[in-house]
Amino acid sequence: MKRTVSLLLALALLCGCVSLFASCSDGATLRKITPTAEETRVVGTAGDYEIFYDELRCVTLNYRELMELKYGKGIWDKPETAELYREELTNYVIGALSVNSAALTTAAKYGITPDNDSVKDFVSFQLENLAGELTELIKLDHTEEDFAPSSSMLNDYYVQFLKENYLSDRYNRFVMGVDGCIDALRVKLLSDGALPSDDESVKAYVNENFVHVFHVWLPFDEYADADAAKQDAELVSWMLKTNLLIESNRAQLREKLNITNTSVDSSLVRLYNRLIEAISTDDKVNVLVGSVYNKDTSISKYGYYFSHGEYSKSYEDAAYALGEGEISDPVADDSGYYVIYRLPLDQTYVNKNLDVLKSQYESAYINGLVEAEQQKISFSFNDFGKSIDLTTIK
Image (cartoon, rainbow, N blue to C red; front, side):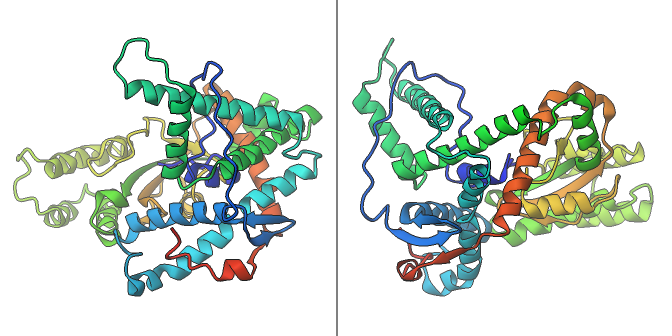
């Protein structure tokens, strides 16, 4: 499952600009690339900020890839199928292009801009870490002992990284700068006391605003099309909702799964037998974590604890709408279908993991500020932007 972390990072993660690298670059630097005239051509405005072509291209091409996973490869190759998905693509792009502007506007209210020294230091640190990540990739591609990549080789890999993620160097650095503004905003809010960080305040926020869930994830890229994923999601939802202590319901399940012999060693039969055992003891959690259908390999026995703004809106809306102990119908987002099971908050877990939850709480608080600002901002194309066909942009 893809975690958003914050509204701002939704776009950064989508574009491949993850700013949480763990490695060190040992002083390696990434060459700044002069943007082309096309990259810096203005396509429209969002609030007080101009939006450039390189941002429009990055957002569009990354979302088109996600839509291909959902609706099938090649949907953009034919005008007739591209037209079917034009509206969804356009609506997403228009919404996404106001995110960075909302973040910058929010930070500016507190005197924070990309020109602040702390933000520049943040960007430099992220670029160094990215250089470190790329250096490690280069070493993996070369088996020579003590191989040391040259600056030229490092920058070649950087150019390839940008290309693979539909990024320009300018936009990559820009997103890191916006991210730096949000980080500086977090520091300021904490230091000013506007964002209470004592344990009791965090616990109170968690108990009032967080949800605790398990889920089964059925990603689009595991299926021929979205309909096939939905069909399996409906089956999983039905199985988990149905009282299988009643034999007639078990018979219906066996028919749905086309199981004629429950002693046969197959994945479906194993799922059926585990499901019967789990539901007989009122323990759906292990089935959700270990189901042959569930492709979320990161889910743990504790499930997920989160607040608003960390996952997709459709997922969060469904999770918050559930009562404790309830199971959702299939819920779709850009990555696939989910079947969500909501559980009560475990206070022992909350107490033991307060530092992690505190970080999520800070992100949720700042995300709320940015979302409120985004509601006031709308992206609008200029004449050049209107002339661009998002379904064919390269």
